Length: 95
Image (cartoon, rainbow, N blue to C red; front, side):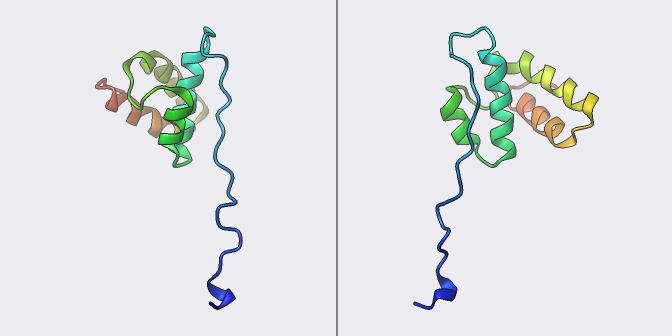
């Protein structure tokens, strides 16, 4: 096979990592919400769900995602605002 068609770097892209506290931490749910939005932004929603043990649109995370939505609005982060709104709609609540 011609070397023009060989991707020597295939598979070398590092998987996204999610900085999470201990699951027993009082900050875990907030960190999980942030990780799910981060994963969605990086095209790794399933990886974020596996890492956090939480699901996209999980109702327990709604208060934290609302906080992240307000922060995104205040900072003018349109992408994070979009993702937070999608999460809230998936949870069945109005953004």
